[in-house]
Amino acid sequence: MKKFIKTLLLTFSLSSLFVSCHFLEVEQLGKSDIPSFFSDIDSVDPAVRGAYNLLYSLYDHYLITYPEVTGDLLYLSATNTEWWKQYEFTSSFEEETSPVGVIWKRGYNLVMDLDYMLTLAPKLREQNQELVDNALAQAYFIRALTFFQLCNVYGQTYSFTNDASHWGIGLMTSIPTITDHMVRASVKDTYAQILSDIQSARELFTDNYTFDRYKASPYACDALEARIRLYMGDYEEAYRLASGLIGRFSLAPRDQYVAMFTTRAGSPEEDIFRLNGYQQTGNTLQKLYKYDNPSARPSQKLKSLFDASDVRARLFRYDAKDGAHYSDICMKFYCTEDIVDEEKHYDPVVFRASEMYLIAAESACKLNRLQEAEGYIRKLEARALGISETAVQLSYSGADQLMELIDKERMKELCFEGHRLYDITRRHDALKRDSGFNTQVLTINYPDYRFVLQIPIIETEANPDIQQNPTSNADL
Image 1: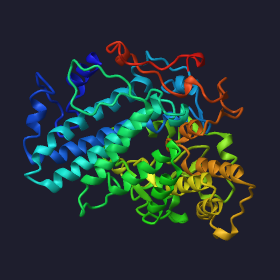
Image 2 (image 1 turned 90 degrees about the vertical axis):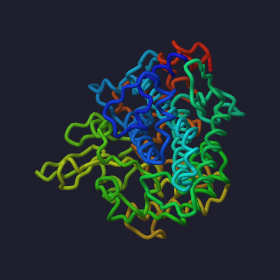
Image 3 (image 1 turned 30 degrees about the horizontal axis):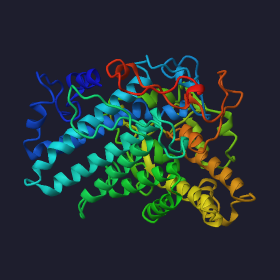
Image 4 (image 1 turned 120 degrees about the vertical axis):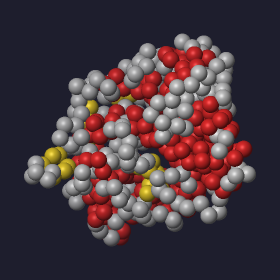
């Protein structure tokens, strides 16, 4: 990892901490300049804001898109060269400027900046302990979320081996040096570190910390852990955490469902944590789905799941102000308000109440509490169809069929939000695309080496100790 860390230190370091600077030139980044930056309490807020900026960039490039392009709910145009190799599962470790290299580099750049904050900011506690502790709590949460997403991209799902002993990611949890060589921890140890970071965040948030959906919070910690516990198969804990959040957050009303994604107001009732796109320069998601010239469209498999009255399907069409009508599109990442372009922005959802309903439903089903599971699905369907919960028709016989209904509900509710590939792999399902996909890769059975990306060449050339992912099923 020597060359990789040196590159980060010389090229990217302080990119988040010094967000107010357009250009910063120093000789020995990471040795004297960063510690001096944390010599005053006024450095804490800029450091936190910078971390959120980098997190937004990481989600926009490319954390939300990757599990959707590699899933079964999205048709990709053949003209989209940015994502085509992932769409066809032909990614290579040599792709430094594709998602293969960009997710790794941006992810560890963010982690490194967080490590500086977590190491150096505590000395400022005597100046303002409440401010510092809440900043550190947010840093721990963001690091946990980043580790989790990196593990999803580069490591097989938690249950790939019986004891989760397969490779996860490198756990950079202290200030790196140029001589450091990083190796990959097991997925078990990776998840343990993530859960430890979440707990550290919980313990640091002060009692009077004000909830803000655009910032980490104790509620966001619970949401992240609920998702993680679901991936681990720890259904009791997943259910406890998700159901607890359902008591705090409510579903957006049906008549405000589309506005949850297409307006700046979003859904204050439903949002647990989302990223603020105001004054952000990235627009990768918007380019991919832009209604007047999209290169990604909902698949027939997805569209066939919706009843005609389902409010969620309204996000697949748009009536523009000039009278033009657009269909077979995704409007989850486009602001439709009649305001100046400078004010328009999209705020990607990371955690919302609907996902907690789905986690509670799946966990209850796995625990054979079928009526409870059914109740959560009824609430989501009632909101979507505009009918009472008792009028919702659910037909199933046993837990397996109910689980199929829950899976379909996840597809309808969470499509394009960055979940699909991981839902397939954590359940050990096969990827099954419909015939409308313009690729020869229509089915991939689980397990398969292609369900994760290769470790990029920027790491493997510099660090001979890093373990590369297999390049064939024979090596799994």
